[in-house]
Image (cartoon, rainbow, N blue to C red):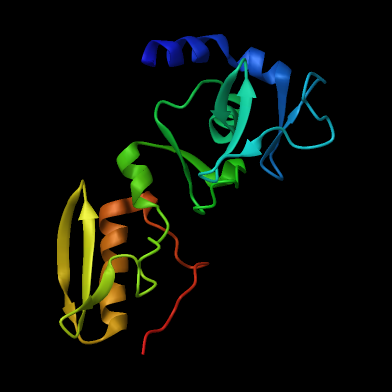
Length: 179
């Protein structure tokens, strides 16, 4: 399987991909350069997969648009994963993309659907607000607080310390207040 992936990446070089696709940095979309079977010239290339990532089929294989854009901008395939800074998987503007290891990529993730406080790593525990953070697959307890805002502030400070540039930017996110 890995050999097959390497062969595909060796075949789909910058030169080959740039003959097939052009990148619009304003929208983050890839467009077909020439018509072909099932290629629509007046629309962005590809579609959104069930996980929310834009993908394009080249040579019978699906590729994430973010990886193809990285190839077109940098001239080589990303070593590992691509992180979407805004956590919007279909936003492929180059300003929103960065190469990341799997661990770095997990630091900048959206809230889980079962989150009850609307803040990652903060939840109710024994009539207090518990703050915690996961570092390299190990959970670090940050404390129990009477005040929700104190627990959130501690969590945000820990994100900056432990996650660095991959700390989530929650400025644009929904900030709920709990009664």
